[in-house]
Every structure is written in C-alpha cells, then in structure tokens.
Image 1 (tube, rainbow, N blue to C red):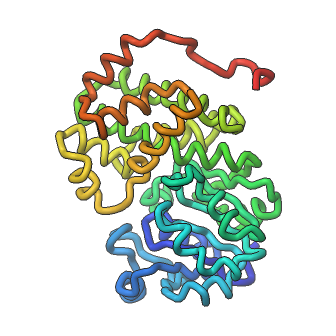
Image 2: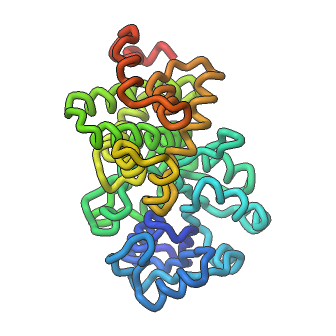
Length: 340
C-alpha cells in the first residue's frame, strides 16, 4: 500500500532525511521541508544532504522544499523532525492548517521551559490533529544505509499507527506499534542524557564492566522516573527503552555519545557541542530532567552526577566515587506489575 497523496517530512537534519528517503523508496512522493533555501537548493542539485548526511544519495521521490504552508496543504501524513527548541515556533503560526492531520514526531527531546514532550507540544499547537511518535534504536546514517532496523510508532490512534506502518515498513525497516505514546517518547528523550555519560566513560578508558553498569543503572533510573509520570514500565524493556539506550550509549555515531567523548577528552561543553556542529538533545534534556527529578523526589543519581560534571565543576572520577559509595538498593524495581 502506498499513500495516494504526498507525505511531508519537516526538518532538514540527518534523521528527517533518512526517513524521507525510506518513504520515497516505498513509493511515496515526499516533500521534505527545511527553513534554509541554500540547503534545499544544495540537496536538489547534488541529490545529497552534504551538511547532515554526506555520501547518502537522496531518492528522486524526495523533493526538498521551503514553503511550509504549501507543503502542509498538500499532505495529510506529516513527520515532524524539527529540533525541540524550534518545533513550537515553526508550527504555531500554521496551527489552523493542522486540524485533522496525522502528525508524527521524530524528535527525541523535551521543551526546556515546560518539560513538555514533542507530542504534547503538537497537541497544544494543533488540538484537532491526530498525534503519534516514532522512536527506537535508529541511528540516522544506519537507517539511510539500509542496516536492518526496527522502530516503534506509538499512539492511541490505531489507524494512525497502521498508516505509519504502511508508509515506512520495508525490506530493511521494521515498524512495531505501541499504545504507550508517553512511555515511548520519554524513553527516546531520556536516553540521550546517559549517552553523554557513556561517551565520557569510553574516552576516559573505563572498562566494559563499567559501561554495562552505567547502561543498566540508567535503564533503572529512566524507568523509575517514567513510571512516576504514568508510563508503563514494560515499555522500557522494548525498542524505545532498552533498545534505544543500548545503541545510543554504545555507538560513536550517536551525537550525544560524541559530545560525551569530547568532554572525556578534556573539551569544554561549548567546544564539545561546537565540534559536533548540530543539536545534541541530551544537553538540553539534562538541565530540565535534573530539576524535574528533584521536584518529583525521584532518585536519579546518574542524572545528578552528570549535571554536577557539566554544570557544577565536578569530574567524572569524583562522581563515580560518590556513586560507588552510595547505598546499594534493589537491582530491579518493577518486579510485579500489580505494584503500579
């Protein structure tokens, strides 16, 4: 099945481009909107995204465009791959044209001022739209290179999930469905923070045991926080939880891991982010997550520790020593699903 009308992808970054290519390979006509006319022109003439996805040929079915109202007018299914800091400002002026649209967020981030997830912002901006999220262990370059990949589309709207599965599911890209939109989206946002820590640990030569401990305790911490906010703990045993956490904490292709690695090499936070040259959502998420965890009284020692390193002048060695001196608690918090 292919969409009869074109599909929109909003955002000219690496993941938006990878998803646009997948859609086009599945027979869709895709309008990929971006703000920068020079970038759109470069993509049209070179058939690649030289800034964010160099070396990947852009399918002929992908049309880089810069007229957002015209794009939205022609498309019912809209994938939103805008940075968390820009999403509200870009879509708010066009709110009237979003009623009835299927809006699927690809952005793994949290709005700083409000602690709102991207789908919650979409709901605010477009209360009459149908909302979903796509999240999972999906490194953009590997998706674009057709590495075998699985993802999760999450929404209580079953028809939306089916539409996204039909549009994206292909030979190398498998799309599972979930009804826990909040848990799936929270998993995608929270793991970015721990990827920074994993990158630092590798740069500092810490062992595989240490990295495994960090990832596993990160999963416990993420789940504890998400359940406090009403998510289903079982979601975190799936692709959008442990799956995404593993790939982001293990891969040098992960942007947040790269920032952490640069920090571990002794760069300042500003220089680490500048070296990356694009948005690392984990830095923004860390600030709001630390404040929110304190307000909710959720025990998140790794988040507190990383915050102390990035913003309070502590070293990773000092933080790990404090963690190791902390009282060991139970290994797995959610033994019985009757407890929540």
